[in-house]
Image 1 (cartoon, rainbow, N blue to C red):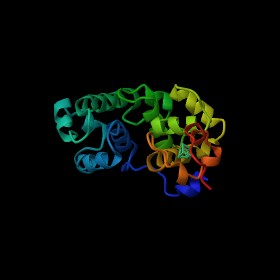
Image 2 (image 1 turned 90 degrees about the vertical axis):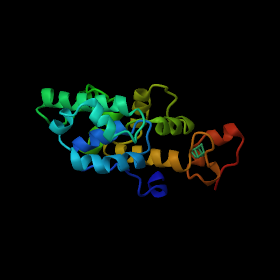
Image 3 (image 1 turned 90 degrees about the horizontal axis):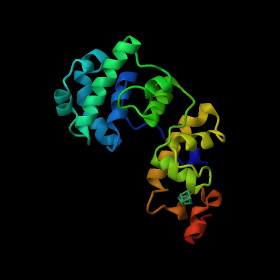
Image 4 (image 1 turned 45 degrees about the horizontal axis):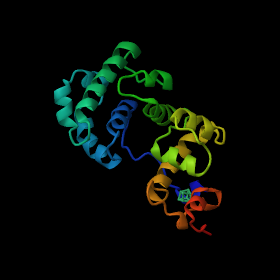
Length: 204
Ligand code: SF4
């Protein structure tokens, strides 16, 4: 159903390699994907290997990425992450979510996005959109994103989980927004407990 509603749902971040994806995903925290793409368009022409990023000073990289929020912290994390990749993984982005999550600046959701997009892992990273919709659809009551992912994964095959992740996000951005969900035009109303809670009419 969500596949029909959001047939083009997919990653909006632009990248060509796992290194570029790592940078883009770190930059995307509290920053729109469109703004990240504007910043990385120039950045990746200058730097796109671990060695090039690891050799930068935090101040120099911060200057390059200052179009994104929290850029000073992100600059430090990106440099530390690439230094760790060189030291621990011979300059290759590790494939496993656990190893990715151990890198500086890489949380569980970020690690899941990289493992899923770059390496085909059967994961369903949970952000605020996914968590909100899972709760409204009565698929998970959990507050911990890891538990939400566990709950959702019980319904979705591993090979379909990244597609579901993108569809949840598209639905959260376009229809099931946090403050004013467009329930009257939603394809999921019959499965959702939220309109009943709010006393709204179901859509057809
Ligand atoms: S019916 Fe409303 S609250 Fe439920 S999933 Fe659709 S938009 Fe979200």
